[in-house]
Length: 124
Image (cartoon, rainbow, N blue to C red; front, side, top):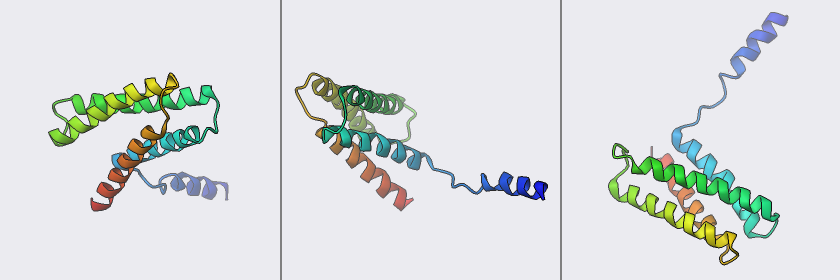
């Protein structure tokens, strides 16, 4: 009986769905954007705001580094837009931290990217 339970549990992990790269990107954007939304509503302290802004900047820095590689398969125009959004995100984050801007623009950008990831994922 114990051997049957072990065998059953060994195969249940394999039954878990495998995420695509696009699905993983969507999930990361979703988690960060959800936290940014909480910050936008003023439902977190400054330390939590700083933490989520840092996570968002790290995400956009990783995207910028990825699209800066010449062998990236995305179209050049899309790569340029992503790189620009990364620069905008960095600049706007500084303004948010200085109390000169709200988080709303960052939420809007991330939400738009998530819509794009979802639409492309449905087409594939």
